[in-house]
Image (cartoon, rainbow, N blue to C red; front, top):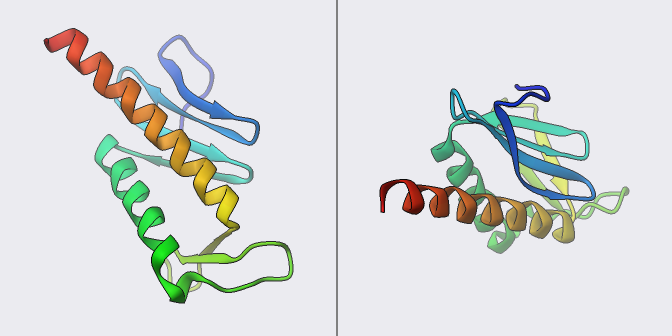
Length: 111
């Protein structure tokens, strides 16, 4: 997890969060509401595909009392992440924007 510094760059943001990267170690941070996840670039891509696939799976569709209708099983047996469809779309949009920026920088640097 990284704090504000010259080596940490925000790649994408919305009202509820951001995606940033440490330019030294290439660790990505996804902060959204009360969720903070850190991972390498391929981990962020995998998280994107996992969230996206969950939208189409009926077993993630569970209506909860606090306006959340998507429940994703986390890495521990008793850990779940709950979102509504709009939140999932917002997170996916931030990841897409961040990955476009990462790819554009790669193209500029390596032609």
